[in-house]
Image 1 (cartoon, rainbow, N blue to C red):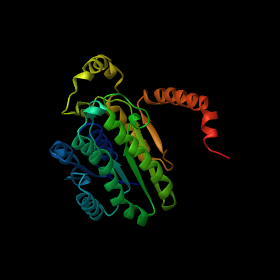
Image 2 (tube, rainbow, N blue to C red):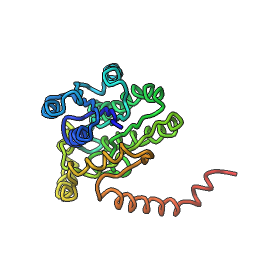
Image 3 (cartoon, one colour):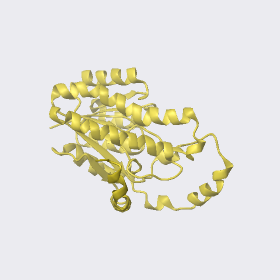
Image 4 (cartoon, rainbow, N blue to C red):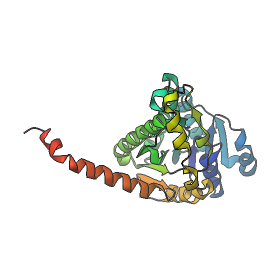
Length: 271
C-alpha cells in the first residue's frame, strides 16, 4: 500500500537521499527545507507524487500550518521524519547564548513542533510512524560538539517518552542513530567566540582521522525504506557499522563504573 511521508530537511544529504528512495517506491512525499531549490530535479522527475514547500521548523505556527496543508493535500500522513538539523562546533565555554539557543531551536524544538502538529492527525487515523533523526551523539558524546550533543540527548529523552505515550493510538516512534556520514552536517557552524586556551586541544582533535569511518549517505536508503515498511519498527535503529560497537563499549564502561559505586548509591537511598 502506498504511504504518505512528510520529511523535513529534505534538500540535501540524508534527507534528499531518503526523499528520492521513497519516491522510487511509489510513495507520496511532502518534502520541506528552508531552501527547496535543490529538490527541483526530483519535482520534475516525480511530478505530483512530490510536494515541496519551504519551512523554517523553528517557527511553531508555520510548522502547524505546514502539517495541516500536507494533510489536506494528500489526505493522510503515515510517516513523519524529523530530519532538519545542523551541527555546531566549539568548546562548551565558547558557545554564546544565541548560538546555543539557535542549535536547540532547530534540532530539538523544530522536531517537537512538527511532532506536536502531526500527532492529532495520526491519533485520528489510529496509525502513524514518527521517525526522529538523532545521532550516536545522542547516546555518547564527542568533544567540541557539546551543544549539538545536548540537542540530540534531548531528542532521545523526548522521543522515548513519546513512544510510551502514543503506542495505544497505533503510533510508533523510532530514533535513528547514524554514525558519521559524508554529508553537509559536518560542514556546520563554528562558535563565533574562540578561546585560545583550547587551541592545543582543537589541534590535537583535528588531527584524528574521524572521516575515515564515515559512511555513504546513499547506502542508507534501503534501511529507511525497510524501516517505514515494517509493522513493528524498533525504538532505536543504528545507521552504519560504527555506532553499535562504539555504544556497547561505552555502556559496558558506564555499567562497570556504576557497579563500582553501587554501595555508595544504595546507602544514599536511606532506610
